[in-house]
Image 1: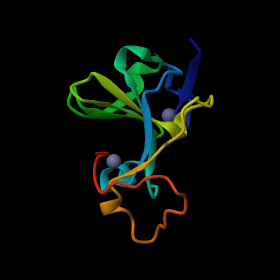
Image 2: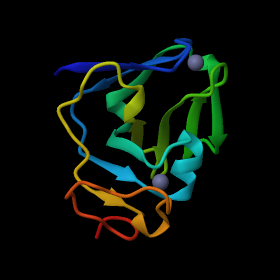
Image 3: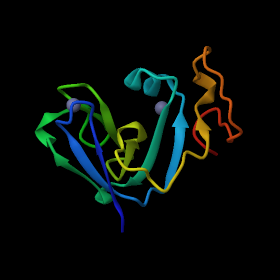
Image 4: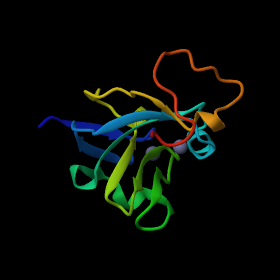
Length: 132
Ligand SMILES: [Zn+2]
Ligand SMILES: [Zn+2]
């Protein structure tokens, strides 16, 4: 199994993840827009046991509780990943991957709260909230 690496902006925190993401999407919700400072967040989902922080775990800033949270580097602020669904899954912020994953974002979610100044210009399916 190919393992991908990812890291924050300053390099204090790094992770490894199997190249076995189950889904990937662009999320336009206001939380994802604010945590990334972007129009939307491309993220990829994987079972938590296939993901591991390999450097700087004590340098993480955890926003949320133990089972559902966003994990940032507390030095540079990068949003690296989110722990979701009672800690069973991890949503990797794809912008922090160093290596290219096999998966690509296949749809847009929460377009109902999309930034009014951003126009989606691809033909991927769009969902008002979560997919289906
Ligand atoms: Zn950092
Ligand atoms: Zn979101």
